[in-house]
Length: 249
Image 1: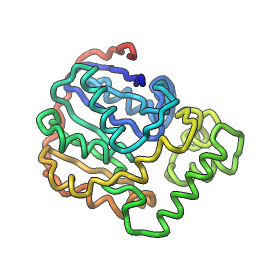
Image 2: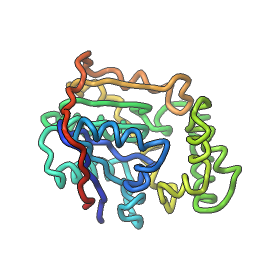
Image 3: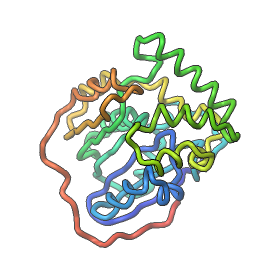
């Protein structure tokens, strides 16, 4: 299986863990993601990659388990030649980042988690959350790749805040926005439901900072579990170097 990754910028390396919505090329133009790539790439060496089953990585994969996603992160950082780096996890990428930091503490200098969680929907002891997740997966399987405005609007309402700009909301609910991830099936989001690393949060000793959006209905109830590691008020020191872009592999 082939994984696509890209590097941009110079300075202290930051690795963004893959999540459900990834595409190395489309992120440069997306109003949702482009500012992340440009701002981090202007001060750091940012490494991104497309998760298995999405973006520019191989789509036809059988194993989409939580362990497989951790293994993919291990392969990407090795291929990129990174020894020590900051790890940034968003959404389901947060659990992958936590698990990696616990297994490889000597390689992770900082852990940045935003909108993440320690337990997937199937491990939260909230029956309604499980049913909602199963219903969403069914809708994804039936509607992904089709022109269904109602489906696009529903998912946009789940993941895009009400104060987002008209451009952001329009892009996310458009067929082009959903084609961004190029996911052929709902299984590529399996770690969002099956991941569990609540105990690992207590074992991670690297400097950690946790961000959550106000009134985040997707994972607000589990956000506090991410806050059990050590914290520091020291910020990452930027390197003022010229931005550059590396070829994908």
